[in-house]
Image 1: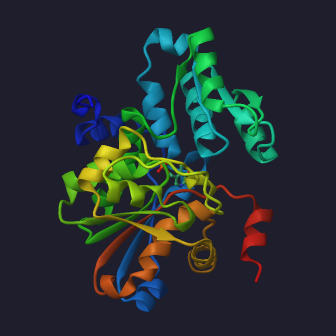
Image 2: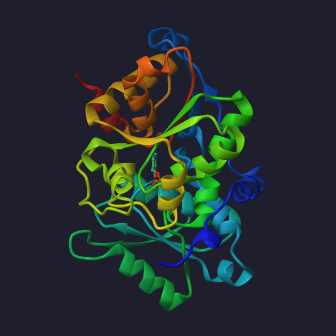
Length: 324
Ligand SMILES: *Cc1c(COP(=O)(O)O)cnc(C)c1O
């Protein structure tokens, strides 16, 4: 086991990332709901990354990573593999920075996502998700054309960029007693922990993953990264099979705990966000609030932060999920 402390990001990296994304990423609003506060007996602050550019926090990490490219890397271009928000984040960041982008997507990816990615000017390479390995395709493209691969979470610049959302939240609302964060591969959670430990050392920070895929919970119990099969859940942004080698040590050393939420709890939260806060949240974006609601007793009287991580769900699916 080699020592990775030199390659792990710190809060200083989050501060520099924040300077880089300023003027490009939105400083998203913090939503509140008096009805929710009254019902749960706590004061809730929702960081609305569903209102971020391209609809999720992933723009922060992608833009930070791409803006650190050398002139040669910029000329050759970037490659990313993703069927979801990371693809659109890299495509948009690349178009803003004038970097050619190639996105590896499954050939059966939703038409809206394909169109959005192409709309940002990226070229899309499609593959068969049942017979081909996207990481291999990404690596082959990178090697063949000199492209730089930007992974969705396991990269210090991506983690530092994701940490800027929590930095803004603490700057805007001050001290919090607890903070609930959606968790897939751990880019958002690890970045959040860097900001929380620097700005609010007493705030408890809870990662929340789908109950169907609790690999992070298992990884913390066992003290090593646990790999699982792709979990069956409506939280498609958190269907990851394992934490990253950069995200795991930060989470292991700083997180308070990792909790889980069921698909039914996520749908309940989608309904609450739509009806009370007039805001569309994708299933994965509801993970944090779903777990916080379950622990209302422990949170009574406290100041509680929740990161709403994204809002990309097409309206037909949204309506279908909310139907009784
Ligand atoms: C990617 C994503 C997540 C999970 O983020 P990680 O950095 O992989 O933990 C959560 N919510 C949304 C909306 C996402 O797109």
